[in-house]
Image 1 (cartoon, rainbow, N blue to C red):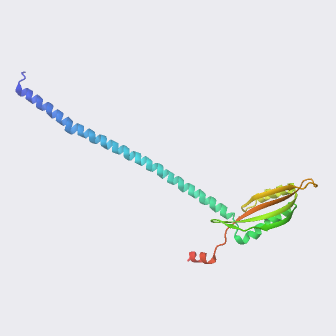
Image 2 (cartoon, helix red, strand yellow):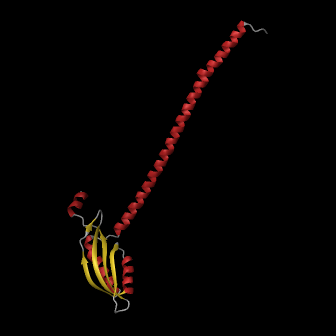
Image 3 (tube, rainbow, N blue to C red):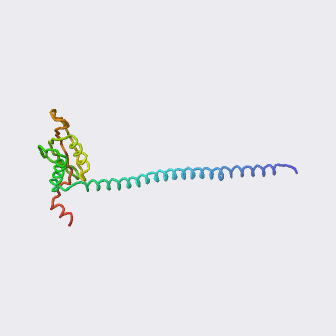
Length: 187
């Protein structure tokens, strides 16, 4: 077989068609495919970020539920404002049950907070230290929320085991609600 001009021209056209097919078909397709792979990867990353954010929202819902349960628990421990005298009577009876003499009881101005109120009470007690210790333990075990914010203990020198205590006790309670406001909200 002889290669002449005609055959060489045919071979050149075939090589040009192959180069054109590579440039216009295969290379362009590879570029498009690479762009689609990049877009798919970007969308997968966005989807992963969305799933992480959604998991955080589910976790927030769970935390919110836990906080609402804790709030309900503590609110159940708050006496009504009208029951504050009953709580004070319980504290007085605890002191007497532990052989403590209540010398003074003075209620201070109550402080209203968001959702609760605090009634500080100054007390002066005297008696045996072991009784005072039992009094504090029983005070802590009360079903109501109470807190000792200040305490001063003095030992009575001439009597062994005797002491005098001055303490400020805070009792937490639900604030009074206005009758008109709750009636209006109920309608």
